[in-house]
Image (tube, rainbow, N blue to C red; front, side):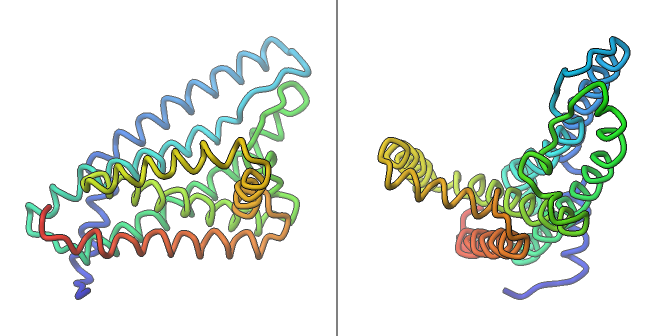
Length: 231
């Protein structure tokens, strides 16, 4: 896949603001709504009450961006003579930056607002629920980063394959696997063990490594997807 660094940079910038403003707006509105609810609960002084942390609302950014970029920006950029290889690498940069920024912001909010409000309102934060802070702040940052990166590239890839007939087949296979694995104890345990590795793994190195390897493997599936002639 031949690439052009200037083109990659340009596509990366476009992906950050074209259509993705919808992701920012949705996350901002959810964040503001959560802050207002927390503030009201704080004023009412109701110890023992709980709510999802405001920082978790920001995860909407990477979720929606990973859907909008391949479904809207790809066709637009290709019609502007963009290169598929450049789009591939540009998107990878986008998700790395999204993941790092979200990880940092959510961690800062967890250590400031969430801690300040804890005597009155119990804020349920993803990094506490999943036990990612147990190994220290640095590992908590990289655990989040790896997980958000995996989430972003997985959603990007699933969105990208919907332009193929077999994309729908993959959706049906995933739904079938979940439907079959859940009722059968042995298979259910395999499913639980898989999610345990990428979410609740107590070993931070194993957790980060597993998420990054899965992210790389899943995102590599975009290479044959982008090789198609039809846009």
